[in-house]
Image (cartoon, rainbow, N blue to C red; front, side, top):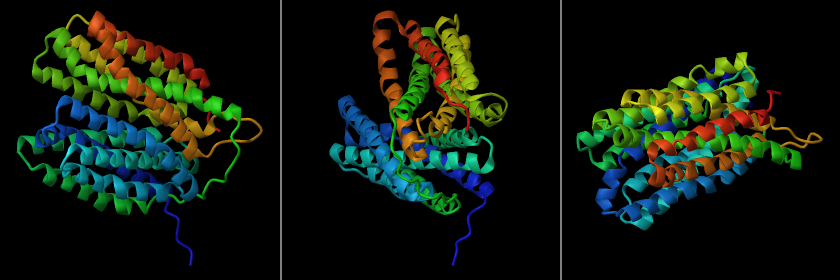
Length: 385
């Protein structure tokens, strides 16, 4: 008995739902971190340990996701990853101490990386099946999930909803909606093992460098926009908080036309244009005379950086290689993402360290340089094959 392959249209819709759920679960947790800190009585150092556990788990999960998706396909990888990602959110909420919290968060982040590799690999398969770009729209759904999760966490905190009830509801939503969605994903054949060449590694490192620039800009914008508006422009608490909302909304809006843009322009041209626009937006934020102009600069940064990650991840399986010796799509995506994480891990702290000496506005030169570097590295982005 043969099992019918889901249609590409249903698979795109299901992948969009799964991307949305990953954003919703991540933002649900992020919005309740203060409640977790208060419940466990964590010092800033203790909270830093929990954050480190998330970063470490995310990095460890990437090779796991690569191996799993390469051997069993993105559909199985997404299902198995989600089976850990959603429940571990509730486990972290119920953790009785810092060691248990760190362990739960490390597992949660590792499962998230598995889901991340699987969904991006599914997106690449869908682009080939549909013969058109779809990854940018899929990533936009994740941004919608982040907005929904942040709003839900804000409402839950304001209404004093118990942490376990709120995150338990988020877990249930992830499992109830995610389970059926994974069954609608395309089934790809497992990728055959192929030798890796020096040429393919160099191609992926170039893409990873572009991803690192994009992740640095994204993480720096979300972490520093509110502080910059408040500290350097005297914005009130409401306007400063609106800065993060504006950047997040800009990330969603910027990804919506990304697929149509790729139909009209080469990948390298999109990366070059986005990198230059990031530099312009960060420059405007740094030199702005008022909080309003600074907010406009940050919004431009969000709009400009939004298409970069989908473009680079979609290009990973097309990285140049020698003699036909390529790398399976999941491994290529995991490699580029791993290198890209260097940007998100080092960018925001570097901005903070530089701001100690020259001020936060001047420290934004790092974001400007990251945008310019992405533009320069655009030549490493391969054309679609």
